[in-house]
Image 1 (cartoon, helix red, strand yellow):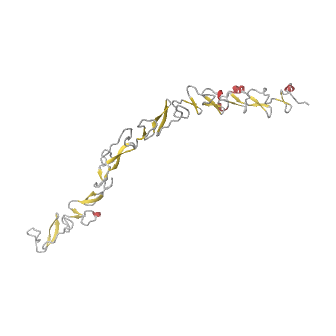
Image 2: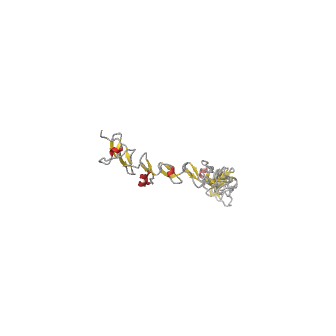
Image 3: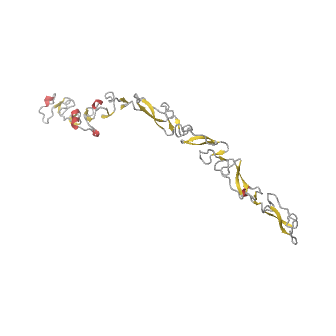
Length: 333
């Protein structure tokens, strides 16, 4: 039998191996149980019984100084034979804990917070001002329609959401008032909308406007100062509703009665055919069939034709051999 049994059997080995691998009775460079022959920055590979790269204790890591990802490597993870920043939170500076072999900001039972801060969910927080941990960890502040705040350990109301305001100055109901639509607080707390003439008040987008007009009236100029100023039952420019203009007719003026469009003939004209499409088509000052009024025809004078002059019947052309010598239309020519 020529193999080794104990380490002393390997003294004077020609290649300098001094450790006996009792499993194979061969002299080797190292075994996991006897790795002192390896440099501090190496460890013994149990498969080959040779020294390979990778730490075997913290001393090797201090010599390497920097580990993976450029972080300080002060501790040796002997299970993986690699240098890491930490193995437990106690390896980290104050205000940090060990997570995934690295020191990160946080706290735990091994590393409590300092400076009066509380450890809430792994983070050091000031429960006097933290809206998520107000006075105690997990005690979150909430405010309706607003950003919640915490001051001196008490929940409060911060900035209100757009269109809201804290008009009652209470914290328990947040920003309770809709200043974009409340006629008592339109645009700001206490800013009340007054009732316009002939209408109810309204608040839209934080501005006082005309609400509902009384029957037959409209806010056609869109001014809240004069309320519902237009009578849509009689206005030709807004007949039946704002902007509903009555159309013009020949020789007539448009009218609005009972919210319905019509027209009124100008002096000297008449709507004798009752056709609204052509308006006041008849000239009552010259029409013998409608002289001075629709249907008022001029009778033919004695020995003459009838005409209408200035809305009055008159003698036209005398028959041959006759003349209107007395100038009276009653007896013709």
